[in-house]
Every structure is written in structure tokens, then in C-alpha cells.
Image 1 (cartoon, helix red, strand yellow):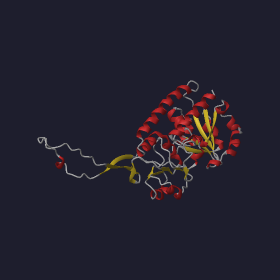
Image 2 (cartoon, helix red, strand yellow):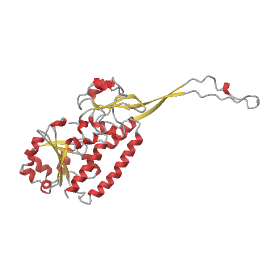
Image 3 (spheres, one colour):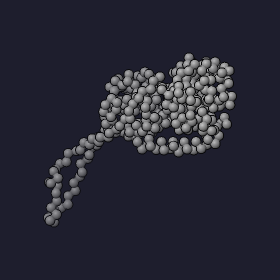
Image 4 (spheres, helix red, strand yellow):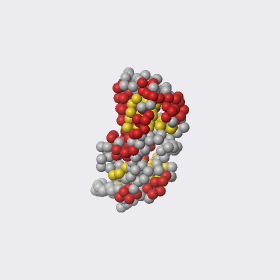
Length: 336
């Protein structure tokens, strides 16, 4: 896995107005105020047809977009939640977002256009989109032949900045600000509730089991990291912080679990599920958690292990993080 970096994007709005021709010049319509015999004449205003477009300065250059896109296709799963959070239901979406519980209702009438690595050009074309989102360089050329395509490389923008960027692109800036304000209010309440039960100075680690790997996850790779480390202000054990500092994640050996997790007061444990398109770790779970080196970890002995489904903690969009906040606080309080 790699993290791509992008600069903050900017948006310029251009209003293009096409005015119907007026039948007379302005001086010809003047009224002589001194002539009392001139009857007052009502002149109908010509209809004005306004066509609005917006020019977006993207990493691929300027793109002319509709002012208010109505047929949105999200060709990568990681951006679906951003669009939904702004009140926009896409006509097409990619990936296993359809198996993620908190998107399910909103996506019930949305067309699946493929998985996160391969989308169907035919399906997307048939949907007649007026804007397409992707972060895939491989997809971009083909998709841009169908409709205006915005390539937002996955990386440097945190979820707040990214939602605001989607707000600019979709002309939903007010909705983006309102969503973040509501989240901040909820965060305050949840923090007050949580820290009556849990010490804010506790160390928290995120561990994910795959078929052949054991991963440590950091602040910028989903799995609740943004909520735990950024919004709730927990810290990871120093060894974990060091390991994930470069990529946002790290692969470790089974034997090194005590080295990395020996100082963790709480561990969030994810098991990758092959049924949703990622390498399965179901068999690995019993192999790891039955070992004495796992059972003797302080967090395990204290009962502070919180198992999560990867498909509910994978994403880092506003809707995902809102649901992850509920899960994290509920799990940590219940173990107190």
C-alpha cells in the first residue's frame, strides 16, 4: 500500500450567461417626459437563458463542470461516503461499499459499476453521468472520454479538507460546513461521555490480521485511526507510532507482537474478510489469539480488546467516521 500526496486543490466559478437579443437599442426606448400626450407603453422583458458552468482547477488541468451535477458516478469506493455526506446520491458507485452497513440504505437504488480496481466503461457510459470521480490514473483517460472526470489523488487531504473539496466541486460548500459543525458537536458529547470511563492518557493500538500478514494501522489509513488519534486525542504506543510514521501502516511479524503492543492499554483488532474482496484473515485469528504471547499482552489481560469488521472500519469519509465514533466509544465504555 502506498500513500499519494496531492496539493490542496482550488475552484474557480465561472458563470456563462447567454442573453436573448433585445429588439431595440436603449436610446430608442427612452421616454420624453415633457410630452404629456405620450402614452405609457409596457415593454415585455425578453427571456434570459442562463447556462452555468464551473471551471475546476484539477491536477489534470482546468475542467469545465456543470454548476449543479445531478448524475454523479464515483468510480472508486473511498469517495462514495464524501458524496453521500453532502446529500448527493450517485447514479453509480464502485467497490464493496454496497456491503458496508451504513451506506446500504442510501445506495439501494445505485448501480454498481465494478470493484475498486476495475470498473465497467459500458455501465458508466449507460448511466450518462455529468461528472465522474476517481483517484486512479489508470482509469482517468477512459473515464474522461465519457464525462468530465475529476481525479483527486488519494492522500494528503484529511477527511475534513476532502469533504470541503467535494463541497466546492459539487457546489455543496454550505452542506460540507454544516456536516462538519454537527460532527464537532457530536464529538464533544462523545468525548465527555468516554473520558468518564477511560483515561485519555491510555495508549491505543490498531491491529489488522490478513491471511499472511499482521498490520499495524496509523492515523491516516482508516480503521478508526482518524477518530482515535486525531479526534479523541489518544496516542499509540511509541513503537507503533514509529513503525507507521512513514506509510501510515506497517507489517510486523507474529513474534514481534509483544515488542509493539506491550505498552498498549487498548487494542482494536480487525480480521480481513475474503468475502468482501480483501485477503482473508479469518483462519489467522485463532492462530494468533490462542498464543501465549498474545494472551499475555496487558490489553488482553485487562479485557480491552475490541474486534471490528473491516468493512465497517475500512473507510475514512465523514459517514464512515461518524459511525466509527459511535462504535469506538461504545466498545471502550462497555469494557470499563
